[in-house]
Amino acid sequence: MLKNIWDFFQNEILGMKWLSRLISSGLEAAGLDTSSRIGGSVQFFIYDTIKIMILLGFLILLISYIQSYFPPERTRKILGNFKGIWANIIAALLGTVTPFCSCSSIPLFIGFTSAGLSLGVTFSFLISSPMVDLGSLLLLMSIFGWKVAVVYVVVGLVIAVAGGTLIQKMHLEAQIEEFIRNGKAIDVPQEELTQKERLKYTWEQVVSTAKKVAPYVLVGVGIGALIHNWIPEEMIVKVLGTGNPFGVIIAVIAGIPMYADIFGCIPIAEALLAKGARLGVVLSFMMGVTTLSLPSMIMLKKAVKPKLLGIFIAICTIGIVIVGYFFNAFQYLLV
Image 1 (cartoon, rainbow, N blue to C red):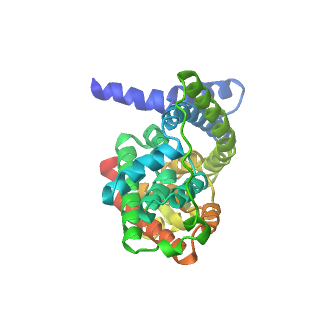
Image 2: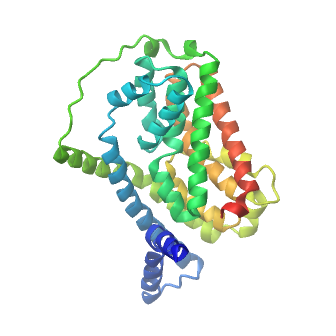
Image 3: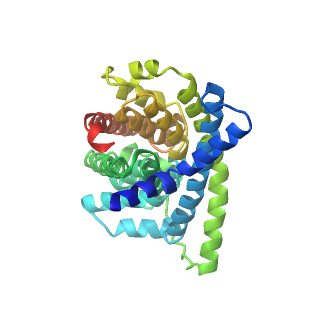
């Protein structure tokens, strides 16, 4: 009974399979054959766009409400109360309730560093924030199931904690740009929001974030529809399937030029997996896009010197590749 209840929750609530059936029926009634390439692409595009935007709205409501209790100043003070690896763990966990893309996290990273938090702690936050958030957990559950979602979040946090700890051990403080090292944090008293103000803030975040994310969702769903219905399965399997041991590395490299958050990556990942790409390859691609996108690295270069930027990229890349091969090895236990 519990399994049936969970399957219903995953397929009909998170996966919204009812919506897929409804859209297919509507398109068929309008005379469009959804089994054709064009019809299948239209059905995929409409279904995935609506599904992701509904989930997106719900998740932003939840995450923004939580964020209303953790303004940057309060977050900095919380991090300042911990030392050693516990500080890295708390920073990685706090990264899960921050904005959805790495470019949004970099200003917070600069502020925390200027405030005197240790470099390792701020990098644990910087890695975790785009790679792992509360939204990724529910969204991944809707596509890949709870096992994959939970393991993805756990290994993402491990990369963030391990990466921050390693950077701390290397004593690279001199690699931070001088204007940040010499910056001063200003302690501004944080006003406690009333419940009405908190709800207003939450709704404003929903509208603002949805406007920012919507273009990436549309592009991602468009690419996913193209992969799902127009690229031959044999080509995907050949490049990203079992037969290619370098599929994970190719996926990470392919993700770097892109700029999207996890909501834009999901439809592409879903289409690749349906076409025969390995699970580790798909998740490595998602991690590469969200953590190592070229625009994010250009922004980060303004805050850190080339040596530290290179070390950061190397740590994230190695961690993502290891995670990719891990998921490939245990795919049949997780899916």
